[in-house]
Image (cartoon, rainbow, N blue to C red; front, top):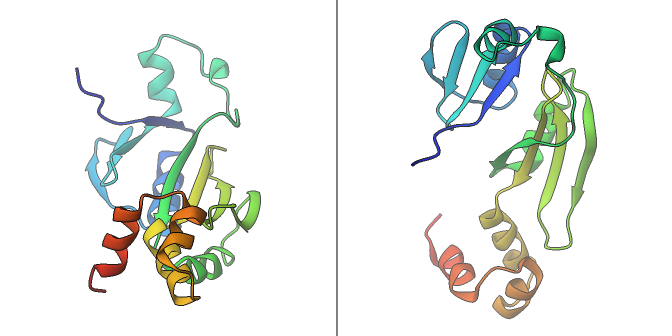
Length: 157
């Protein structure tokens, strides 16, 4: 058996598609009208069709459960934060930095699914190195193996 894709149920498939394309730069690879699959291997399904699939009333489909998120990584975190501030988003929390150095922000999509956008860990490692951290200090701070940190720092940019 092989896991394929997570599927999010949405009220308005067109509004949600626009959100994922505009705010998260996702590209549609399959569009079946009531179901859309994005390049990052996740799908949106209209609430109406989903209720029919599972033989439930649409009122039984609960939004804003706060128990699931889609996680995205961004290489240019600072510019991304500036970009999304121009959108009408409801934030779970503003941008902050975890103890391992990664900066993140969380907000809701139009159907109240949590979206997390984190700074790519490769960029965190590079940022620490440029700030004068030794490889050993980066390993300790980021909790990433030394061979991974060295590979990131040796990879041509």
